[in-house]
Image 1 (tube, rainbow, N blue to C red):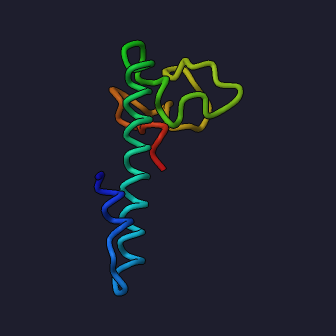
Image 2 (cartoon, rainbow, N blue to C red):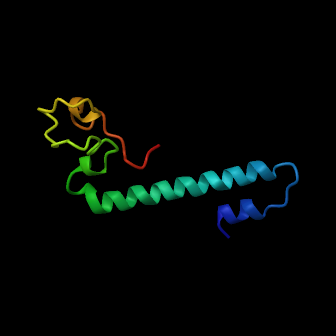
Image 3 (cartoon, rainbow, N blue to C red):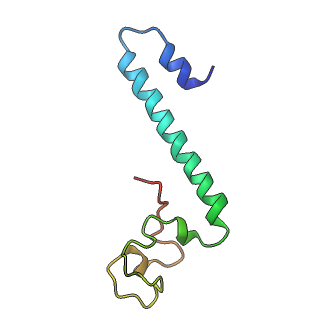
Length: 89
């Protein structure tokens, strides 16, 4: 039995809401982790920018961040200083 199944099946009148919230958070974190792993397997070896939240933020982005005049996190990003995985909230 997984931890989520155990939390959801635990008999508790006092902590039912807390147990359900904990199980939901575990499921959310697992989905986020699975998304991150899939992204890294698919894109990570090519260019970490592809899986950044700001990648192609602007429709008219030409992806030449060093010369870019658009207002986005990429313009000032050096060595992934502004990088944020696209799965993060």
